[in-house]
Image 1 (cartoon, helix red, strand yellow):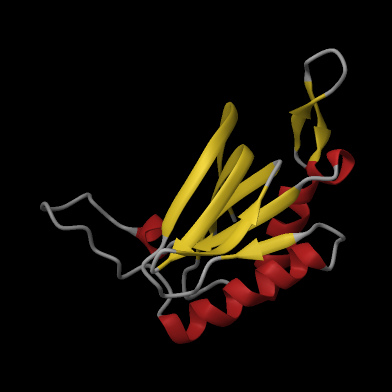
Image 2 (image 1 turned 90 degrees about the vertical axis):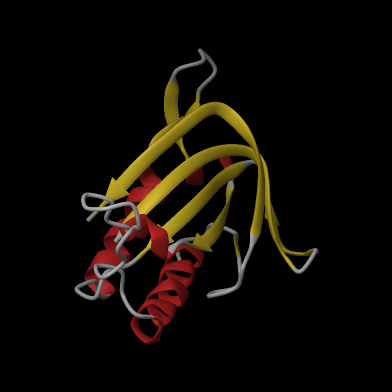
Length: 145
């Protein structure tokens, strides 16, 4: 599982010009899965995202977690995180989980974050989505398990 985490002041995702998810402040998470991912990876990543100390404390140091600041999360599926560009000019996505495996993992991940008390909004799995965000920092991290 790969996650690109962006700390945001606000973020939204639209499908066909209609906003389907919006959060802020908090995190925008672009998430991708591989066929070997399972519930253990989903649970680990949910804990990691919630527990990372990436928000500023009173002294301006990144010392507070998403849970501590009362932030929310926008989760957007992104199979292209598993794009392999090592050969040729066209990315290969053979390492990305097929939709029938990835969609349930995506839903379980969003539920795992929700189950830990963090408000979650999502995009629409498999849809062409427009993502808009206002960076907070910027702070961008790549998480993998």
